Image (tube, rainbow, N blue to C red; front, side):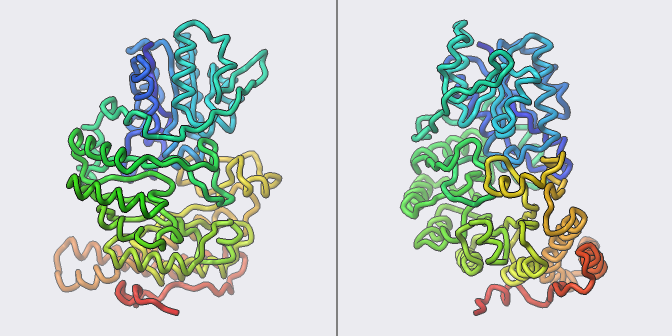
Length: 505
């Protein structure tokens, strides 16, 4: 069968991500395409990541004239898990475009799993629930052989039966991901990706995964695809893929998109040893938890493997909020993990989350103090986001109004009765980024004063502008909090990075 397959995440429809110009091929989609190819089918990739509109999907349908259209979300992309409304609209438009040409449609992704009836009522023939590769391969074989009446025997499907959504048995996860073929990266326009990266950042980055799922129990984290399970590839299999990527595409950098990379020290020890033996030498970034990073040998092995940066799910500098989230981590572990990574020459990024129920300005102040104290190399900020299937969602479900998803990743809207208003958190988002900028750039600006070039003065002017605006922004935030006498305060920017790295007890 000829199968047109692609995600519905259009980076062009997400202004913040489009401006950042850091596109990655849709890894989950390329895995599915590779499995289809292994099953004897001809997958044709439509890469919405680089497209400008759904019309390009329809144009490609006209050109490729496929037997089947598959909208397969990249489930390694956290934005797909967030189910942005703009991308849902795009997916529904793509379904309707295929149906106008009498092409059957299969959809796989977090939003479709949570809202199967919405997708089926817009014309999708099948929605895949859970991990999708095996389900898709089995379903396509049925469709090709004209045995769609046997679809009820395929695990992990939803479809309409007499106008009612019928779901088959749950699909069991792939316990040995090594059995999957490597993603079909040859289908993607790698030259286009390379050009965007090089022209905007001076290097070319590609993405990989070493594992699927997450076994931890953060009560706001949805797991519609892999559930609470965690299955990892062998270090040998991962390094073989890295070697193939190096030979075929020569990236300068890699992003391991796993929720957690290298949960066991023994896995990382073997991984680092194989990388050094094969002399792959590609720096990478990955995600991890502060408690895991403190296990003996983890950070040392990451450094030996060439890790450049670790993003930590810090979330909050308040232990009260971490406990309410059921994170299972402590603030002192975040501090210690940051210092340990820095001692090994590895940069640190913090994912931060504001607006969790019960959060006060004192808790916010503790988060800001954590940033000032540890001075991470980068930060990412969100507000608590209710996703179906989580304890958090269940606890605030009655508070949800008509808007239950962000439109794009820069929305930052509170969709329940949070501690403060949406304008408050949007202002806090701006202030946190400005404070982080002033702390992280202070030493650079001081050094620039000794080199009076035009480009340096521009940096200095930008720094001073943020510094002068910050007191006004703080006053605005206090007013938005409803208590202008609030005690949380701007940072003391006098600390250098070296001072901040010194442990305090």
